[in-house]
Length: 427
Image 1 (tube, rainbow, N blue to C red):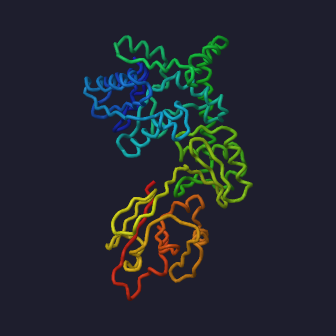
Image 2 (cartoon, rainbow, N blue to C red):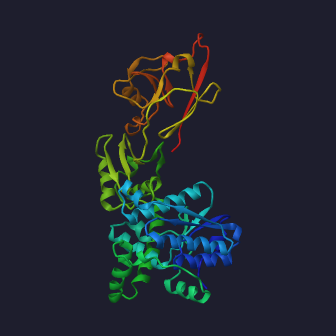
Image 3 (cartoon, rainbow, N blue to C red):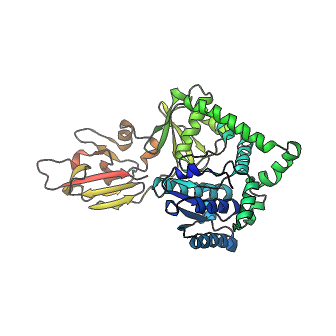
């Protein structure tokens, strides 16, 4: 009998089990099939398209096993190699990040309350060691959380030996991933080389690491209670400089938490945190790049953390209807949609575009100034200015969405038709 936390699983209304077909995940799935109501969960398997026929075999194995047991199974076909090349990740990083993105989407879209994974005791030990080697702080010593809001891991107290015994006693089928033995992957090196060498000197190293995790968890809980909280921004989160000016352990933890909120479990190292502290004494607008396309920038009296994946767009004609441009959905209608109001006859021969050098804007009942000065006045962060939708004719700006219309398109007693323009950022 596996010491899987059944009550944790039963505390959720709807779960999805991420199953690869390997020994650990199949033990978990077999356990779920025999201890949970089948209408309370389903299965996903992520096919990375990295291992040719072997990967296809694993995918089909999971699908067939679920079908034979009356369990719904969804396959996610991913092109991980291309994903990694596009984003500058190693295969190991990219596969982990993409899986996390899939899991997050499932939970946020309410397809399930949590994603259940088969991470077990040895995985926890390996993760903590990897965090130590990368220069982690106390949070890294805690290891993987039992429930992080997206993933639950009900097998963290289960050993490899217990899983092997369960598989044998219950005749649970599984497949073997040959890449588990390839030493080019850092986790495999930890598992197959480093830990084995350490155990020759310290036979109980695994249990000692787990005890360290328990102690670290108590310390981490205390730190969390005293850590400044991040604030939501339009495209990320921010920390007030006054809250992290001490540069102490709570300030470091605040930075880690902030980055976690905008990225997919970015692994911050000491050098990254120090580079963010350095921003405190620099001028506004200075920024530092962080792992996995994440960035921190000083803006006035705060540090803003965001993903560097904003999308620009090509100009399109101003027409009635719904337009998706870059990060924005723009709805243009003669019916009141709660957006900006403009004179249709005046604005109809314009384009929707992003800003260009030399553009000017005369706001409603105001003076004319450069578009850049106007955006500075209304405190639009520099990192967002090149992605804002602008309505313009030549160099004259008729509206800055979603903020304000120009005086030239304002409603007057001569207006024949009113048009409503509503712009919402969808990311």
